Picture 1 (spheres, rainbow, N blue to C red):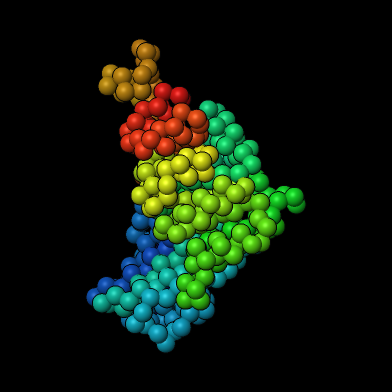
Picture 2 (picture 1 turned 30 degrees about the vertical axis):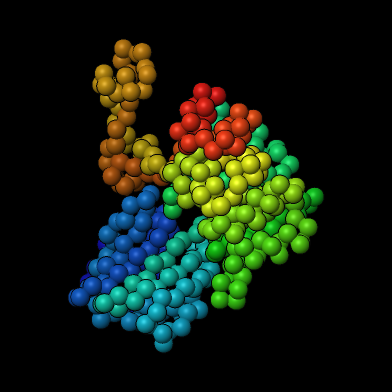
Length: 363
């Protein structure tokens, strides 16, 4: 709990909102949820992928809290009937934190979600991403290609944007013209031309990508391939000598190939354009301070393929510095380099299972 009832009565709404945001940043939360119910406001933080209950407040303070947050996010405080989006810069311990704000009308009032974007924990090097040696080797080989499409896939919240930004940071140089089109622009990167999608004004991924191609780009990043038109333009861009990065919402690397074909891209164009696919998930890490060792069971040893008599594994403990035995997350990756044999299978419209079997054999 952030405040007890006595402290809450003595604090202003401005101070209360600042206190909630400060505490969320300290606890390394990715999102703040402010949710109205019939007789209370519930405040929850998303930490390491899970929502945690932080504070309950009287419902009569909802209007003041939402108005304050909307003012901070440059949103319309008079409009409460439709969803709104806003953003702001928040200063915490002499560093700038970007906040993305979303409001949603519910039966009990407006629900607010604040996404916390901390540049210090967002822009990582290739090594910091968590790729082990074999995957890192494949990753670096893919990045050295002069043109083609590199896709990063995975569900929402799996760290795809972090991976893309890390790649762009690595490739950013005075000799390269790098242009991105995103919805929204998560972080402003020095030396890179970033374009924000604006559907109301007619600036979609597809239209923006067409315009980018007239800007003499070397490297293009498309925030997400959402439709067949964007997919076809991205593929055409790759074939005509550009290095293109984008994301897709698929379960694994091989599914991305099938998804592009389903979007209407010809198999021979897919095989010619794609040079690599990275699929990723975020998994929780055990807290180093309280994790507890134990001897692996026969099933665990068999599952891990270990021949050791006494294999030591670790399980979560509990301490003041972690969340039920876990602290932080790390990405796990599947990297698929598109080579000649896989290209031939794509051209033959082979099933994802056939492509997957071949890819596993080549590891």
